[in-house]
Image (cartoon, rainbow, N blue to C red; front, side):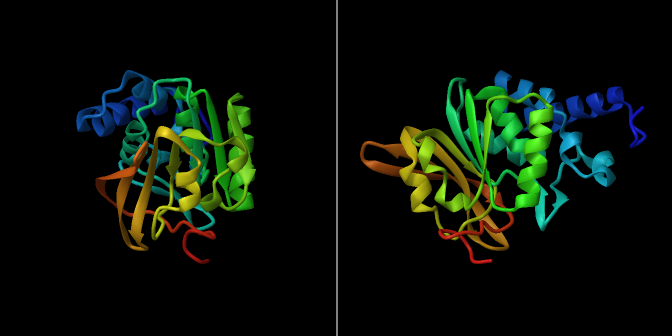
Length: 221
């Protein structure tokens, strides 16, 4: 029995239920993605007071004005990248580290950027403690990406921008995909941007609500 009062078996059952009802039954069926969600213990990525809600169908507060996204949204964004394994992925907005862990289960290498030092430190400690050795961490402005390791096969952004940052588009590999919420602070559209020989194509995935992406090419503080 954990300090939270829940057993590992109870939490594993909650995780399986989450994957089946919130992800698979909503049409996301990639075996690699479903396995990733089963392998990553979401309850470790939320504050202790929220463990009982870790597998609920909604976002949860993680401190510093930030949230861990609803499981389905994490799944939808990840699925939109069309990862097959072997990719190099940029994760903008590390937050709790949950999205980075999901990506690391599928992709070869994950580069994750977080502007809030406290979150960056705790996520790094947690992910390294879980033996993820294919994730690299950077404290900084995510709207600028991580140019040193570009280009990326895929880029995922867990905060809303007023427009797609040009720096992120520039760091995307040919045929690569960028998933990002774009719009006003209190309501956005999740967009999937693909780089082609003729430029960039964009499609709308679904309406969403994310915290603001703060930075040079995002919102001001």
